Length: 427
Image 1 (cartoon, rainbow, N blue to C red):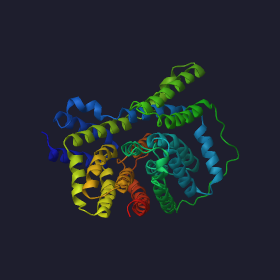
Image 2 (cartoon, rainbow, N blue to C red):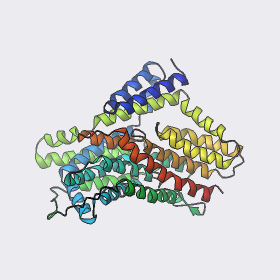
Image 3 (tube, rainbow, N blue to C red):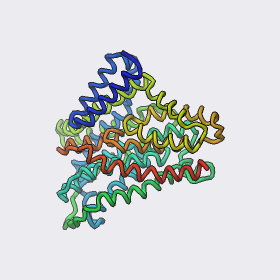
Image 4 (cartoon, one colour):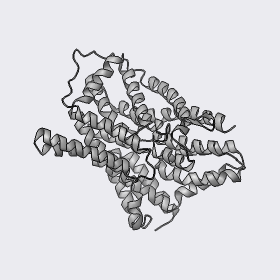
């Protein structure tokens, strides 16, 4: 059984089931992937190529390292420091989201969520408040800033490669303010949205009489080293696709070895490894395989061609369609294969429309595809990771919990970017 229609039906059913039965998402995703394979819609020879091992290795390595980070009590100290500086719960939540956004402009979104979430959890424990909106805000803010720089997200790297852009081109391109400023405009408005969404969280933050004492600074050094190495690796040409994953896992291994010699017990190795969320890894694995299957059946390419046909001869209409269709499509499928498919489509489409410079279409694609994942809890790897962290802490994230933050945040971020990009690169 192969073909676009069966692939679309199976994909849609699986997604509806994942949204409906949130506690069983990993099992539903993996079951859907197995059906795609058994029906031949995903050939056996393309299974391994469909899996983004870089993301899975990054998650596993960073989670192990974060377990050591939490054990050292550094998140508790950071929570104390943040609580000293902000007046109430509202500002604590928004500050954490903005902090995550800054880091995510230079580090992968998933790694950012894994690093910041423990701090948010500690603040929530100290304030005895629900951490769910905190973590959701951190995840969506991380996704937003992924398009701000060349190294912020895989889609940005792909577009930068296609246009031969340097790191600085994201700040200043063709003699104009670049993509970075479009994202930051959205960040300002989305921060105001977060302030509105958390407006009722006015409970004052009690000032602690003493700060938490960190028991070991080595995990913090390793975590900061991870950030530095991930940034440095982004400038290495023709590096292996799994480079970031290798970095995260290597530093985790160093941390585990150090922990073993420090405690002289094998539990020093086993305990952090137990903190790796294999359910989240399983969910991502299933999604990677399903998306590869619909791509194999021509669904994504057909969507791209449909968008191209709908634009006609109007550059503004084409730009509008690309931005908003990318938002909708990326809310349900991973943006990497979609962007990879659309880049050559735009390259062929622009000359046919008489466009001498298709930059506005490329930038519209990047902004729409990057932000679209914030619309649903399974639209981006960072969202899945954040929800996985909450699940391990005993919290269930309902679809409504995510939608009431993710959707207004997405609209607030994409509208100013949409206007900005057309004014600078479309007119």
